Image (tube, rainbow, N blue to C red; front, side, top):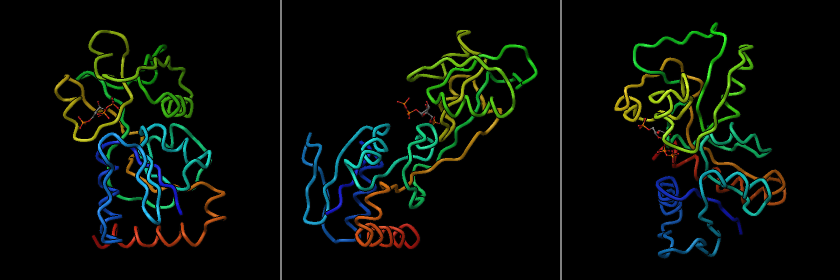
Length: 205
Ligand code: PRP
């Protein structure tokens, strides 16, 4: 039996569709239920930012989560496979027409991805002031809260509609299948079996 942590929303649905393709069964959570038990798997529905936490503490053996979230959280888990879904970028955005001038004495950056942002500026030896926000990041430069933002860009529509544009791409991200380190050894055959089956679907559809 493997426990699988899935992030609520589209990615959970798409991952369950992969399982349905593999096993020919339908895998659907009942209404508001957070656990879906089948004969081989126990699926958990959690918040995106909590997937790696469940896997890290071995409350789940495997999980599905974005690379951006993994990079931000830095938990010690195994990255098994790029599922090539949820493709997006982490990028620096500024008001249209403004230029990224890293030689300025003080730079203020608003983001919900504090660690990725800290690392980016530290690697360039730039003392940036980072302001942590929890959402609507695009608002910050418009009201003078920050000079720029570090945020997820998928279609680019949110930035565009708010008069911002990407001035620098920090990383590309997509959804990964991850595993707990102990589970990977204790349940190696089960983990590798589902890994291979999912990989087959990802590659061949
Ligand atoms: C992300 C991000 C942007 C938006 C970008 O937020 O913070 O606001 O998506 O997408 P786009 O380039 O396609 O417009 P998300 O929808 O994940 O919500 P969140 O702020 O709750 O994380």
